[in-house]
Length: 309
Image (cartoon, rainbow, N blue to C red):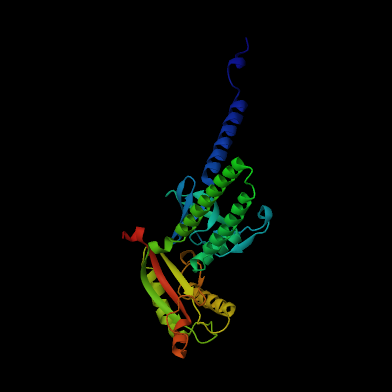
């Protein structure tokens, strides 16, 4: 009898062990990577909270995290974006790996540019929900007119009416969900605030505000999980389009100063808000009032959940 038939040969044993090791490494590598989808429902420092179908996920943003606008059919168009675009209410897809604190360390964050525009508009106070409601009213009126023309088909009319009512309820629920998503900023405490004024048609930050902005940056760095909110405004003199552009450029220039001179990472700055001529603080009928309205308001915020209030 050949004794080798009852034992594994040494080369076979080595090959089997190597294959098992390779499979274990592949499984381990796969377990480390993750891809999740959800809606941003909060920002705190370099982390953001993501509401997913499976619950809340804490995402960690780093200097190597890439934000991409993947608009278009099949997401064929990709555009690199700043991390400041990651505002509460934006639906995103995050790809990365979990660290030892069970945080998803983001390699890429992808989103649709149209949804970003909606999110930033609502943050800036330009609410498209009213337009959606008016459109829904028009649709309902058209549906009711159609029902009146189908009196002979009572059963079909009742079914259509039930479908319309369900659609209206779903639309109302969607509107409520949008409003809730963008109410997150009410959950923040204000730790510090600086108002920067601008000359007529000017967008450059006056050096007289450098000391105040630098002091705000230093104070922000002492606050756990801080984020900085920047909102630009304009006086109601000139066209609405020009004032919107001026408020946007003012907010962008102040944001650049905070990052470049104040050392504030973009991961801790919310997308600059272009508020246009909304929320005027003084009358635009006087030169003094116009000067007060040409401003950028900078605030240091901390999530009330972190502060314990």
